[in-house]
Image (cartoon, rainbow, N blue to C red; front, top):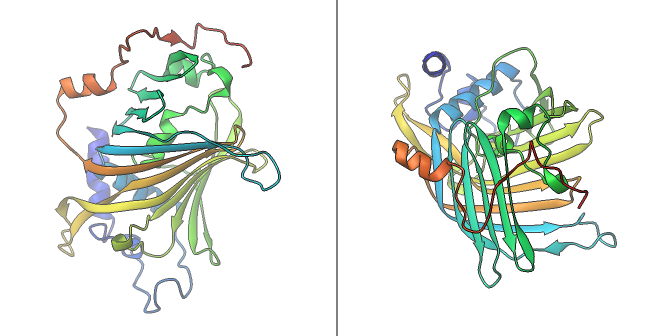
Length: 321
């Protein structure tokens, strides 16, 4: 109830959030200069956090009926480690706040299946391919955050990071955030220090387009999510390549314009240490559909996969492979 009251208060107190204009959302007067020119207006960390939270408040759930997953491994540097592309997978993806996530995808000519999921209590990873035994592991969020659950093979798994890339994370207000503006790139960056589940210091960043995104061309307002180590080296990033802007219900009492929300339609996820990246093309999207308790259990409960036994990562021990 308190979270709902906070969001309602934010909707009332933040000017102009019924429209797509980022500058109007921050109470910045329209610059007569064309988009992409003129000085980049200064904004505060509180404004950027507020924008993210109000957008997340309007995107309670999203489902994509058609998802294409393409992945490759390598550093992408000519003359260095060769890149290896994997067969494309096709499936669907559903996500619901705060931690419900599910993506199921299969290969076409190649017998490959991936099932990634999360709910408020735990997350899981299932993978099978020709000439290899199925891998099916799970862990509670509490064990993972306490460092008790080790993911085999340094597998890049972070359900919360995916929810953030989808625009469905609510951030706690506080003094930990820093906002900066880049005049040359015409971006804002919101950054803050935190730690990984095994207590390694990291720095997170969210990069915004400082100009108003062109909704008609699928431009995202939030462009990139970055994770860096304590020395500033990029560990992982999620690029929002394209997004769709849709009505979110209700309208701004001052301007009368309908409230809108953006959700991604193409994501590039890159893990630098593993030299692995995955592109998700997200089509046939629907937002804020009514979900029954039966729908939630069907989508987000730990699945019963024939022929595979889930292994608790907090109890299992894996080799280096």
